[in-house]
Amino acid sequence: MKVSEICVSYSNENKGKVKITNSKDAYKIGMEHWNLDTIELQEETKVLLLNRANIVIGIFSLSKGGITSCVVDIKLILSVALKAIANGIIMIHNHPSGNLKPSQSDLDLTSKLINACKTVELSLLDHLIITKEGYYSLVDNGELL
Image 1 (spheres, rainbow, N blue to C red):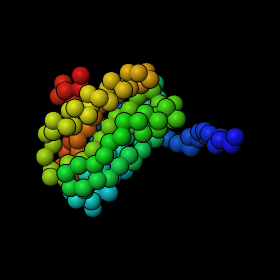
Image 2: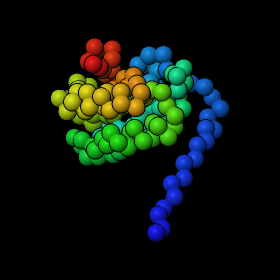
Image 3: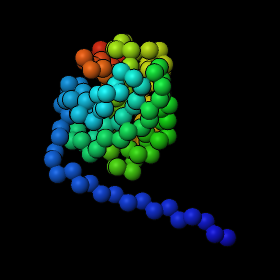
Image 4: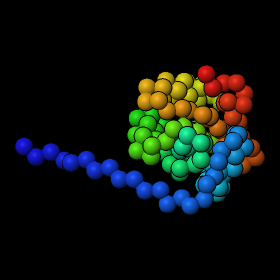
């Protein structure tokens, strides 16, 4: 019986060491990797992957959606983080409306992601909601349980 062989590879060509020390650092990195022409058009989610020293390993573009939502697949987040051998992650998504306040679905998703991360000894360090004008950090506002 033939089955597919799974091949896992890893490379890190990131020569520069970018350390995340606060939410402002994460916002800055996120904005550098966002298309500012579409930030007010469609919702998008990205995940920053960090090592134990909070050095950025990379950024993963998870999904793009419509004007009010996008699909966030927790299994996909975990699989990418584990493949990158990340110790921590920061989820970043935009609100095309410009409203920085997290929705109930944002808070529910964050709670589910925290629990999933615990299972694989991964830390959800923050969840940022971003716009062109600024950001909202769930950690800074005491909403990351």
